[in-house]
Structure formats: structure tokens, C-alpha cells
Amino acid sequence: MSEKLGIALEYPPEWSTREDPAGVTFTLRGAVIRLTALETRGANADDLAGAGDLGNTRCISFTNRHGVKIRSCLDTVARSYFAAFSFNAPGRARRAFSLSAPFNLDKPDVTRAMLDSVRAAP
Image (cartoon, rainbow, N blue to C red):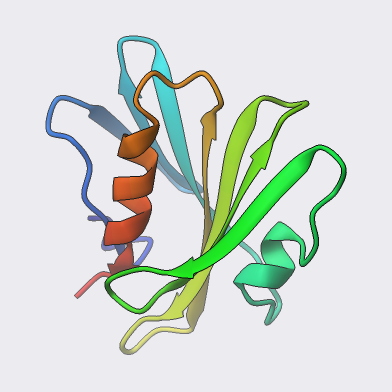
């Protein structure tokens, strides 16, 4: 959880984290997942990730178990995953974030589990 960023999410306990002003980096044995706070100017998750697929991307939208709408994309050229989401946190302005990871991450279920747990920090 990052009170400064206003976000909470779950991640495997063996992963290490490093928070900076723009986000949080999660690492394990060379694998990196990056959570980044975004400036949106009112955009929603579909706007942030692009409403349509490009030739090299495949995107899906889903709502996680906390009611956060997420737009998740796979970029086959960049060989990476990108997900964008936003939510209203109590007592704060609307917040938007991206979660990105390399395509060759040996545990892609980690990224999906993290996305499923995203919510506003209490």
C-alpha cells in the first residue's frame, strides 16, 4: 500500500518494492513490474490505454473484485504488458495509474493478481 499515492494492491511477499515520487517498482530476481501514477486530466482507463487495438496490441477491459475498471493490453512488438486504471479515493481527487511488465515475465499470473487487488488506499 502507498498512502502517498493513494493506492493499495497485493503482491507476493518475496518481491521487493521501491517507492519513488512517480510510483512503485516491484522486483524479483531480475523481473520488474512498475506501477506509475499518471496525469489524466479527466481521462478514464479506456482513454489511457487506447480505446482500440493497434496492429501489434491486444487489449481487454475488465472490472476487478474491488470495482476498479481496468484496461489491459499486450504489445507484441514491445513485448510488454500495460494496464491502465483510475478510481476515486475517499477525500482525494480521481487518481490514475499504469502497471507495466515485460512480456517474458516468468509469472504472468502475478501481474493479473496485482490488477485484481488494486483499490484506493483506506
